[in-house]
Image 1: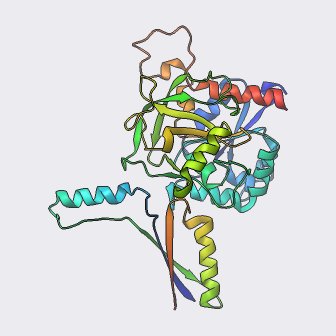
Image 2 (image 1 turned 90 degrees about the vertical axis):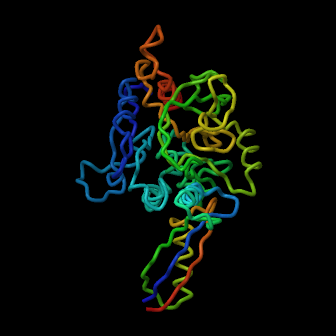
Image 3 (image 1 turned 120 degrees about the vertical axis):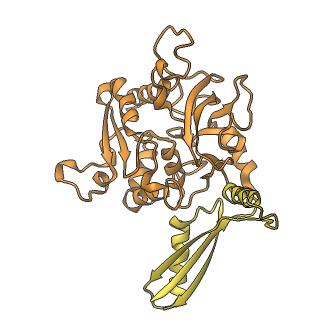
Length: 278
Length: 82
């Protein structure tokens, strides 16, 4: 399909706050994004012409923010509301290999939904991962360096060469990825075998390093993972905030030949994928 | 009517930065006798139900589906008839 025909649903509820940049990223690349309030998909409190279905879109994005005030746990309420009526639709959406991106709070929602890490099933009824409170017990907000580790499974990073280090800002208080404590090694092994590890936090020398380079204490320095199919991807840092090179913190100090920011490839990659696949 | 009190804590081995920070602050205030601080969350629910058992079953499901994440949390349910 043509890029301009790709409908991207940028989902929001109360407390979502990164939807504009997320929308802009897709729009600037020539796709056809749309803000969609969850109520429009649940068909609650909206007019007939505002009603939407999951399959009206070829790509869904859950942007960052503090959905429902992060009550209970970050992302838990957004996930519960989605599951209440859309669980089956979303599962089918993923099975049909349509892509879903979750950034920051979106990653937390995908985890609470049981869509990530998605080791062998599309959607678990009970989550098997958690994005827990940062080790520092603080909101960590600064540029972070991510090494791309994926061999091509993840449809959101195919434009990024393996081993590339990207500067993508983090801004979260709950980003520490955890798996069931007695099975951590098994999960990591499976993630590695399935090529599901996408980004890991590194220091400026490209080494896997602890705090502050890893802002949250995430296991194995993981910043982003995809499911076993490669079409559901969650990451804590914000690629939509470095769409242009001048959004990088060093833009006045360094010379750059083009205005491509380090996060743009995430959006370009998924649009490439949808164009080819559907 | 029943009142269910759900006490949600962290599993052994899961780090508790809120508890650790609270302990640190208490010590800074001079409470050197404090050895441990853990953060727990309590959810109080008023529930209609036929019996204590059926209410417990229902609250168990709430814990599984929303109130806790089994990767990091433990929970205890106490139910009293109102």
